[in-house]
View 1 (cartoon, rainbow, N blue to C red):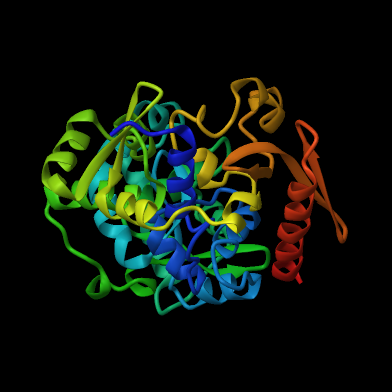
View 2 (tube, helix red, strand yellow):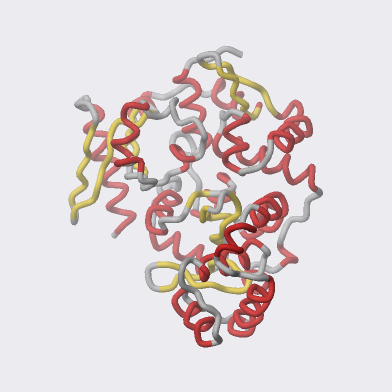
Length: 359
Protein backbone atom coordinates (compact mmCIF):
# COMPACT_ATOMS: atom_id res chain seq x y z
CA UNK A 1 0.00 0.00 0.00
CA UNK A 2 1.24 3.55 -0.67
CA UNK A 3 2.69 5.34 2.36
CA UNK A 4 4.64 8.43 3.30
CA UNK A 5 8.22 8.45 4.50
CA UNK A 6 6.97 9.70 7.86
CA UNK A 7 4.85 6.52 8.13
CA UNK A 8 7.90 4.38 7.37
CA UNK A 9 10.02 6.14 9.98
CA UNK A 10 7.33 5.96 12.64
CA UNK A 11 6.95 2.22 12.10
CA UNK A 12 10.70 1.80 12.43
CA UNK A 13 10.75 3.75 15.69
CA UNK A 14 7.91 1.60 17.01
CA UNK A 15 9.64 -1.61 15.89
CA UNK A 16 12.90 -0.56 17.53
CA UNK A 17 11.26 0.50 20.81
CA UNK A 18 12.38 4.09 20.39
CA UNK A 19 8.74 5.22 20.46
CA UNK A 20 5.72 3.39 21.78
CA UNK A 21 6.19 0.63 24.31
CA UNK A 22 9.74 0.15 25.54
CA UNK A 23 11.04 -3.14 26.87
CA UNK A 24 11.48 -4.02 30.55
CA UNK A 25 15.12 -5.07 30.41
CA UNK A 26 18.15 -5.22 28.07
CA UNK A 27 17.71 -8.95 27.37
CA UNK A 28 14.14 -8.21 26.21
CA UNK A 29 15.50 -5.59 23.80
CA UNK A 30 17.98 -8.12 22.42
CA UNK A 31 15.25 -10.64 21.72
CA UNK A 32 13.05 -7.98 20.15
CA UNK A 33 15.82 -6.78 17.81
CA UNK A 34 17.26 -10.29 17.22
CA UNK A 35 20.76 -8.79 16.96
CA UNK A 36 22.19 -5.43 18.03
CA UNK A 37 25.46 -4.23 16.52
CA UNK A 38 28.08 -4.26 19.27
CA UNK A 39 31.63 -3.77 18.03
CA UNK A 40 31.80 -0.69 20.28
CA UNK A 41 30.96 -2.25 23.65
CA UNK A 42 30.09 0.97 25.48
CA UNK A 43 27.92 2.30 22.66
CA UNK A 44 26.12 -1.04 22.33
CA UNK A 45 25.29 -1.09 26.04
CA UNK A 46 23.56 2.29 25.64
CA UNK A 47 21.79 1.02 22.50
CA UNK A 48 20.16 -1.69 24.62
CA UNK A 49 19.46 0.48 27.66
CA UNK A 50 17.82 3.39 25.84
CA UNK A 51 15.14 1.02 24.56
CA UNK A 52 14.13 0.01 28.10
CA UNK A 53 11.66 1.63 30.47
CA UNK A 54 14.40 2.70 32.90
CA UNK A 55 17.82 2.86 31.21
CA UNK A 56 20.55 1.46 33.45
CA UNK A 57 24.09 0.47 32.58
CA UNK A 58 24.19 -1.85 35.58
CA UNK A 59 21.13 -3.69 34.21
CA UNK A 60 22.91 -4.30 30.89
CA UNK A 61 26.02 -5.60 32.66
CA UNK A 62 23.88 -7.80 34.91
CA UNK A 63 22.22 -9.43 31.89
CA UNK A 64 25.64 -10.02 30.32
CA UNK A 65 27.05 -11.52 33.53
CA UNK A 66 24.01 -13.78 33.89
CA UNK A 67 24.31 -15.07 30.31
CA UNK A 68 20.98 -13.59 29.24
CA UNK A 69 22.85 -11.75 26.45
CA UNK A 70 25.93 -12.95 24.57
CA UNK A 71 28.14 -11.23 22.03
CA UNK A 72 29.47 -12.86 18.89
CA UNK A 73 29.94 -12.42 15.14
CA UNK A 74 26.65 -13.96 13.90
CA UNK A 75 26.76 -12.15 10.54
CA UNK A 76 28.76 -9.71 8.41
CA UNK A 77 31.91 -10.29 10.47
CA UNK A 78 30.57 -7.73 12.95
CA UNK A 79 30.08 -8.22 16.68
CA UNK A 80 26.44 -8.23 17.79
CA UNK A 81 24.54 -8.78 21.00
CA UNK A 82 22.13 -11.72 20.67
CA UNK A 83 20.00 -13.86 22.96
CA UNK A 84 21.77 -17.16 23.75
CA UNK A 85 18.82 -19.30 22.64
CA UNK A 86 18.95 -17.69 19.18
CA UNK A 87 22.67 -17.87 18.54
CA UNK A 88 23.07 -21.41 17.23
CA UNK A 89 20.24 -21.36 14.70
CA UNK A 90 21.51 -17.98 13.46
CA UNK A 91 25.00 -19.41 12.98
CA UNK A 92 23.38 -22.31 11.15
CA UNK A 93 22.20 -19.82 8.53
CA UNK A 94 25.37 -17.74 8.24
CA UNK A 95 28.48 -19.70 9.24
CA UNK A 96 29.13 -21.69 6.06
CA UNK A 97 29.19 -18.58 3.85
CA UNK A 98 31.19 -16.53 6.36
CA UNK A 99 33.91 -19.15 6.85
CA UNK A 100 34.12 -20.01 3.14
CA UNK A 101 34.68 -16.34 2.38
CA UNK A 102 37.79 -16.28 4.59
CA UNK A 103 39.73 -19.07 2.85
CA UNK A 104 42.03 -16.69 0.98
CA UNK A 105 42.61 -14.52 4.04
CA UNK A 106 43.56 -17.56 6.10
CA UNK A 107 46.00 -18.58 3.40
CA UNK A 108 47.55 -15.10 3.39
CA UNK A 109 47.97 -15.34 7.18
CA UNK A 110 49.44 -18.84 6.85
CA UNK A 111 46.68 -20.30 9.00
CA UNK A 112 46.14 -23.98 8.23
CA UNK A 113 43.56 -26.43 9.61
CA UNK A 114 45.99 -27.81 12.23
CA UNK A 115 46.44 -24.28 13.60
CA UNK A 116 42.71 -23.95 14.28
CA UNK A 117 42.55 -27.42 15.86
CA UNK A 118 45.49 -26.70 18.17
CA UNK A 119 44.16 -23.26 19.10
CA UNK A 120 40.77 -24.82 19.91
CA UNK A 121 42.30 -27.57 22.03
CA UNK A 122 44.37 -25.10 24.05
CA UNK A 123 41.53 -22.68 24.60
CA UNK A 124 38.98 -25.38 25.42
CA UNK A 125 41.30 -26.78 28.10
CA UNK A 126 41.87 -23.31 29.54
CA UNK A 127 38.17 -22.42 29.68
CA UNK A 128 36.64 -25.77 30.72
CA UNK A 129 34.92 -25.85 34.06
CA UNK A 130 33.26 -22.46 33.80
CA UNK A 131 36.45 -20.43 33.53
CA UNK A 132 36.81 -17.28 31.41
CA UNK A 133 39.68 -15.34 29.90
CA UNK A 134 40.09 -11.85 28.50
CA UNK A 135 41.27 -11.43 24.93
CA UNK A 136 44.82 -10.49 25.93
CA UNK A 137 45.06 -13.59 28.13
CA UNK A 138 43.93 -15.81 25.25
CA UNK A 139 46.55 -14.31 22.96
CA UNK A 140 49.22 -14.86 25.62
CA UNK A 141 48.08 -18.48 26.00
CA UNK A 142 48.47 -19.15 22.30
CA UNK A 143 51.76 -17.29 22.01
CA UNK A 144 53.21 -19.30 24.91
CA UNK A 145 52.27 -22.48 23.06
CA UNK A 146 54.01 -21.31 19.88
CA UNK A 147 50.93 -20.10 17.96
CA UNK A 148 51.70 -16.66 16.53
CA UNK A 149 48.83 -14.19 16.94
CA UNK A 150 50.24 -11.07 15.26
CA UNK A 151 49.05 -9.57 12.00
CA UNK A 152 45.38 -10.46 12.68
CA UNK A 153 46.15 -14.17 13.13
CA UNK A 154 44.80 -14.05 16.67
CA UNK A 155 41.62 -12.29 15.60
CA UNK A 156 40.95 -14.85 12.87
CA UNK A 157 41.52 -17.74 15.25
CA UNK A 158 38.99 -16.25 17.68
CA UNK A 159 36.56 -15.49 14.90
CA UNK A 160 36.70 -19.01 13.49
CA UNK A 161 36.19 -20.61 16.91
CA UNK A 162 33.24 -18.31 17.55
CA UNK A 163 31.70 -18.97 14.14
CA UNK A 164 31.95 -22.71 14.66
CA UNK A 165 30.21 -22.53 18.04
CA UNK A 166 33.17 -23.16 20.33
CA UNK A 167 33.38 -19.83 22.20
CA UNK A 168 31.48 -16.61 22.75
CA UNK A 169 31.94 -13.36 24.63
CA UNK A 170 30.25 -13.78 27.99
CA UNK A 171 30.69 -12.10 31.40
CA UNK A 172 32.02 -8.59 31.74
CA UNK A 173 35.77 -8.26 32.15
CA UNK A 174 37.14 -4.83 33.06
CA UNK A 175 35.58 -2.54 30.42
CA UNK A 176 34.81 -5.32 27.94
CA UNK A 177 33.89 -9.01 28.12
CA UNK A 178 35.66 -12.28 28.71
CA UNK A 179 35.62 -15.35 26.48
CA UNK A 180 33.85 -18.52 27.62
CA UNK A 181 32.93 -21.87 26.12
CA UNK A 182 29.59 -21.54 24.35
CA UNK A 183 28.39 -24.98 25.47
CA UNK A 184 28.98 -24.05 29.10
CA UNK A 185 27.74 -20.47 28.97
CA UNK A 186 24.72 -21.09 26.75
CA UNK A 187 23.89 -24.81 26.97
CA UNK A 188 22.69 -26.52 23.83
CA UNK A 189 19.61 -27.75 25.71
CA UNK A 190 18.39 -24.14 25.99
CA UNK A 191 18.87 -23.40 22.29
CA UNK A 192 16.18 -23.43 19.64
CA UNK A 193 16.49 -25.99 16.85
CA UNK A 194 15.13 -24.97 13.45
CA UNK A 195 15.16 -26.59 10.03
CA UNK A 196 16.90 -24.55 7.28
CA UNK A 197 13.75 -22.99 5.79
CA UNK A 198 12.34 -22.38 9.28
CA UNK A 199 15.58 -20.69 10.30
CA UNK A 200 15.78 -18.25 7.40
CA UNK A 201 12.08 -17.45 7.83
CA UNK A 202 12.64 -16.80 11.54
CA UNK A 203 15.59 -14.57 10.63
CA UNK A 204 13.38 -12.42 8.41
CA UNK A 205 10.43 -12.48 10.82
CA UNK A 206 12.57 -11.26 13.72
CA UNK A 207 14.50 -8.73 11.61
CA UNK A 208 11.29 -7.12 10.45
CA UNK A 209 9.71 -7.29 13.91
CA UNK A 210 12.66 -5.34 15.34
CA UNK A 211 13.71 -3.24 12.33
CA UNK A 212 10.87 -3.08 9.82
CA UNK A 213 9.77 -1.80 7.45
CA UNK A 214 12.80 -2.77 5.36
CA UNK A 215 13.54 -3.85 1.83
CA UNK A 216 14.58 -7.31 0.73
CA UNK A 217 18.00 -5.84 -0.08
CA UNK A 218 18.25 -4.47 3.46
CA UNK A 219 17.68 -7.96 4.86
CA UNK A 220 20.16 -9.61 2.49
CA UNK A 221 22.76 -7.01 3.42
CA UNK A 222 22.04 -7.31 7.16
CA UNK A 223 22.50 -11.08 7.17
CA UNK A 224 25.07 -11.19 4.37
CA UNK A 225 22.90 -13.95 2.99
CA UNK A 226 21.51 -14.54 -0.48
CA UNK A 227 18.51 -13.24 -2.39
CA UNK A 228 17.35 -16.84 -2.82
CA UNK A 229 17.33 -17.32 0.97
CA UNK A 230 15.40 -14.09 1.42
CA UNK A 231 12.79 -15.07 -1.14
CA UNK A 232 12.37 -18.44 0.57
CA UNK A 233 11.78 -16.62 3.85
CA UNK A 234 9.13 -14.38 2.28
CA UNK A 235 7.35 -17.42 0.83
CA UNK A 236 7.39 -19.28 4.16
CA UNK A 237 6.05 -16.28 6.09
CA UNK A 238 3.24 -15.64 3.61
CA UNK A 239 0.39 -13.61 5.14
CA UNK A 240 2.52 -12.65 8.15
CA UNK A 241 4.01 -9.98 5.89
CA UNK A 242 2.61 -7.07 3.95
CA UNK A 243 4.25 -4.30 1.94
CA UNK A 244 4.54 -0.53 1.90
CA UNK A 245 5.46 1.55 -1.10
CA UNK A 246 7.34 4.73 -0.22
CA UNK A 247 8.78 6.97 -2.93
CA UNK A 248 8.60 4.12 -5.43
CA UNK A 249 10.41 1.60 -3.20
CA UNK A 250 8.70 -1.49 -1.80
CA UNK A 251 9.28 -2.26 1.87
CA UNK A 252 8.40 -5.43 3.74
CA UNK A 253 6.66 -5.07 7.09
CA UNK A 254 4.99 -7.52 9.42
CA UNK A 255 1.22 -7.37 9.31
CA UNK A 256 1.27 -7.04 13.10
CA UNK A 257 3.43 -3.90 13.03
CA UNK A 258 1.37 -2.37 10.22
CA UNK A 259 -1.83 -2.99 12.19
CA UNK A 260 -0.32 -1.57 15.38
CA UNK A 261 0.81 1.61 13.65
CA UNK A 262 -2.60 2.06 12.04
CA UNK A 263 -4.51 1.41 15.25
CA UNK A 264 -2.39 3.77 17.38
CA UNK A 265 -2.01 7.23 15.82
CA UNK A 266 1.18 9.09 16.60
CA UNK A 267 0.93 10.95 19.89
CA UNK A 268 2.10 14.51 20.47
CA UNK A 269 4.89 13.18 22.71
CA UNK A 270 6.12 10.89 19.94
CA UNK A 271 6.08 13.65 17.35
CA UNK A 272 8.18 15.88 19.64
CA UNK A 273 10.53 13.13 20.84
CA UNK A 274 14.26 13.52 20.33
CA UNK A 275 16.59 10.55 20.76
CA UNK A 276 20.32 10.52 21.48
CA UNK A 277 21.48 7.31 19.85
CA UNK A 278 24.97 5.86 20.21
CA UNK A 279 27.40 5.38 17.38
CA UNK A 280 26.70 2.25 15.32
CA UNK A 281 23.04 2.14 16.39
CA UNK A 282 20.73 -0.24 14.54
CA UNK A 283 18.36 2.61 13.69
CA UNK A 284 20.98 3.90 11.24
CA UNK A 285 23.14 0.84 10.57
CA UNK A 286 20.46 -1.84 10.35
CA UNK A 287 19.75 -1.17 6.67
CA UNK A 288 21.70 -1.15 3.43
CA UNK A 289 19.94 2.01 2.25
CA UNK A 290 20.08 4.72 4.91
CA UNK A 291 18.60 7.53 2.80
CA UNK A 292 15.20 7.45 4.58
CA UNK A 293 16.97 8.24 7.86
CA UNK A 294 19.79 10.58 6.87
CA UNK A 295 20.32 13.08 4.08
CA UNK A 296 23.23 11.73 1.98
CA UNK A 297 24.81 15.19 2.16
CA UNK A 298 25.03 14.82 5.94
CA UNK A 299 26.45 11.32 5.98
CA UNK A 300 30.08 12.40 6.17
CA UNK A 301 29.25 14.55 9.17
CA UNK A 302 28.28 11.35 10.98
CA UNK A 303 31.13 9.27 9.52
CA UNK A 304 34.00 11.76 9.07
CA UNK A 305 36.07 10.89 6.03
CA UNK A 306 33.83 7.82 5.59
CA UNK A 307 36.28 6.01 7.88
CA UNK A 308 33.74 3.50 9.17
CA UNK A 309 33.48 5.11 12.61
CA UNK A 310 29.90 6.25 13.23
CA UNK A 311 29.39 9.16 15.62
CA UNK A 312 26.48 9.21 18.10
CA UNK A 313 23.48 10.86 16.44
CA UNK A 314 20.56 13.09 17.36
CA UNK A 315 17.25 11.80 15.97
CA UNK A 316 14.33 14.20 15.54
CA UNK A 317 11.11 13.25 13.72
CA UNK A 318 12.82 10.00 12.83
CA UNK A 319 15.71 11.61 10.93
CA UNK A 320 19.34 12.25 11.81
CA UNK A 321 19.37 15.91 12.85
CA UNK A 322 22.91 16.12 14.17
CA UNK A 323 25.56 14.45 16.29
CA UNK A 324 26.26 14.63 20.02
CA UNK A 325 28.98 13.90 22.52
CA UNK A 326 29.47 13.72 26.25
CA UNK A 327 32.00 16.08 27.84
CA UNK A 328 32.13 15.22 31.53
CA UNK A 329 28.62 15.80 32.85
CA UNK A 330 27.66 17.94 29.87
CA UNK A 331 25.88 16.57 26.79
CA UNK A 332 26.73 18.63 23.72
CA UNK A 333 24.40 18.36 20.73
CA UNK A 334 25.72 19.45 17.36
CA UNK A 335 22.67 19.89 15.12
CA UNK A 336 23.05 20.20 11.38
CA UNK A 337 20.38 22.92 11.38
CA UNK A 338 19.02 25.03 14.25
CA UNK A 339 16.64 23.01 16.45
CA UNK A 340 13.20 24.25 17.37
CA UNK A 341 12.50 25.14 20.99
CA UNK A 342 10.57 21.89 21.38
CA UNK A 343 13.47 19.93 19.95
CA UNK A 344 15.89 21.67 22.31
CA UNK A 345 13.73 20.53 25.20
CA UNK A 346 13.69 17.06 23.68
CA UNK A 347 17.49 17.01 23.64
CA UNK A 348 17.54 17.89 27.34
CA UNK A 349 15.08 15.12 28.18
CA UNK A 350 17.12 12.61 26.19
CA UNK A 351 20.31 13.86 27.85
CA UNK A 352 18.75 13.34 31.29
CA UNK A 353 17.95 9.74 30.36
CA UNK A 354 21.55 9.19 29.31
CA UNK A 355 22.92 10.74 32.51
CA UNK A 356 20.71 8.48 34.62
CA UNK A 357 21.91 5.50 32.62
CA UNK A 358 25.58 6.40 32.96
CA UNK A 359 25.49 7.23 36.70
